Image: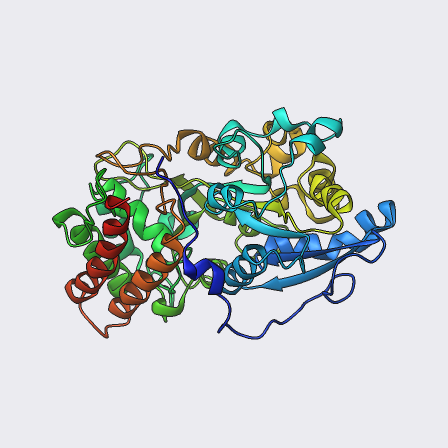
Amino acid sequence: MPIRRVPSILLTAAAAGPLLVACSGAGGAGGSGDGGASVNVLMVNNPQMTELQKLTADHFTKETGIKVNFTVLPENEVRDKISQDFSNQAGQYDVATISNFEVPFYAKNQWLHPLDEYVAEDEGFDREDILEPMRESLTAEDGKVYGQPFYGESSFLMYRKDVFEAEGLTMPAKPTWEQVAELAAKADGAEKGMKGICLRGQPGWGEVIAPLTTVVNTMGGTWFTKDWEARLTSPEFTRATKFYVGLVREHGESGAAQAGYAECLNNLTQGKVAMWYDATAAAGSLEADDSPVKGRIGYAPAPVDRTESSGWLYTWAWGLQKASKNPDDAWKFISWASGKEYEELVGEELGWANVPAGKRASTYERPEYRKAAAAFADVTREAISSADPTDPGTQPRPTIGIQFVDIPEFSDLGTRVSQEISAAIAGRQSVDEALKKSQALAEKVGEEYRNR
């Protein structure tokens, strides 16, 4: 593993960002330290997070007396806000949703409170029940634990079984990307206004770059060689990007250049697309009791080309800021939100398909969950188990990561490259032009690492 440093982008990332808009489940966000009776939580606005927000006051707060002040923001905005608050150790937020991308360098720079002692003393938490890939991804190089997962995910292909049946289409058990492109062309227009596939095109290293990089990996490409040579204009990276951009432009969703996870979820739910390649976590929303496509979605492994598997590995997890004034109460919230009790609460109140899964082995042993999630439970767990952040492609890498390069600079590099790719999807420039600009950006990062 390379030595990581804190880039200036993490220290100033949100300085020029949008004004913070707070959405509170139990009061607006404010400073910590009100006698230990409240914790401030900053989190992404994914559906399962907003469900947590709605359940907290009537359950966690009622049971513990601890008020939780939520601030909820879209993914790109919340990343900037978290990096600003945690890097400055401002302590405005006790807890935030971080991922396995941030944990290594947040921990190294002592922005996070280690959780080992809390885990050891919390008999009901059952750390060993958490799936091994998730445990490892949230453990830093010093061997300490710095996050607990809210849910874990890989990626897979979702498709409308009824549309495929009506059109005489068959989804292979282990599809290739070429097969997916053929199916997208045939499913395009199967119903009025329906497109063949939805793929993220929205700028952001956690948006378009995530699925695109898995395509790059399986088609033989990489961002950097083992010796930090940038490879964004290589034949393999170029082929993968042209394939992705071409597929979404020809058979993808309307407004693809601004479509991210949330937009694609809505598109599949509302019958606007026949397929969607994205996070396994989406299945819970698709199979929810109030979903119009419940029972009509099929799930297949992430499409491949030259590799055996290509799904990513990711977790939205709870990180405790080192500067928190209420770490004990913050842990109580983390333990509850990451624990078995919360999963049971969601299952009973919102339906077992809605459970934030992908993190605990016991989840997949619950008869109620297996029944509700029969369509996707096994393929999800297999995708998580088969994901290999240390060897996701066809050649050695300088650092770990499947859908990202696990260095602090990638938050800036990936975002800037994503803007170029999104512009190509929008038709404002060619893929070759986008990758030429992106290569120049990546070369600067690679040079920094080679010179250390």
